[in-house]
Amino acid sequence: MSKLAEGIQGLVQHVRSEQKMMREWAEGQSMQQRRIERFLKTLTAEVEREKE
Image 1 (spheres, helix red, strand yellow):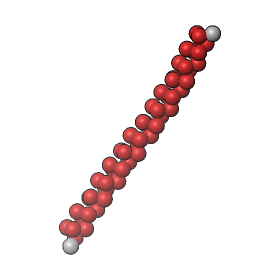
Image 2 (cartoon, one colour):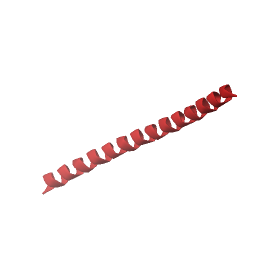
Image 3 (cartoon, one colour):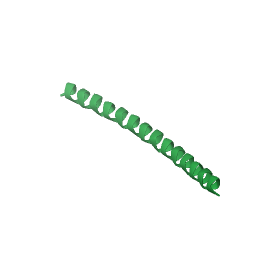
Image 4 (cartoon, one colour):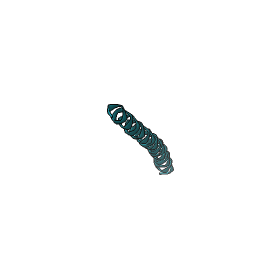
């Protein structure tokens, strides 16, 4: 029974570690998306100014 408990505890720790890694990845993607959005807005504004 103790081996089963240890195995489950190890599995839970592994899953938590992967969840943390996925959260960090998602945060990085979100930051990158915001930077791209700002860049595209700036680029669009520049193109519009060039048209005038």
